[in-house]
Length: 107
Image (tube, rainbow, N blue to C red; front, side, top):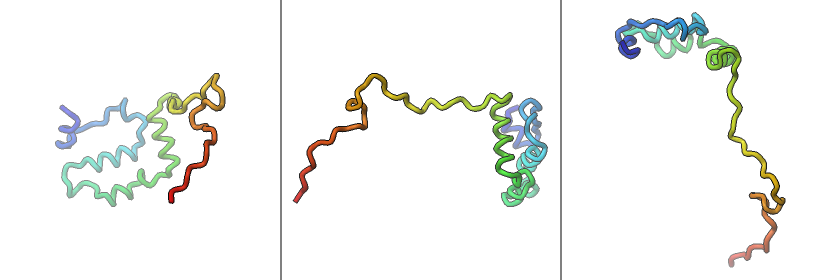
């Protein structure tokens, strides 16, 4: 049965290997948000007041990092920085222009 179908029928389970590092408070919040009957389900206000949502930002960041990067792998280094140009004269580097004649002013 697909996860969507399990949720809409209220017959789901937490797969232990996927939820091993998720706190009991977080699981409790998810369960209360997945209640099929909207009258029994948490409202937005109630969800925001849940103890798990009240945890400190640093605590949440640490937990999220641990779940996303198991075994201390950490994020991969960014490759968005460009390497500096090598073996080029300073005048040839992009972004470094020689001063030209002043622009004529429009009348």
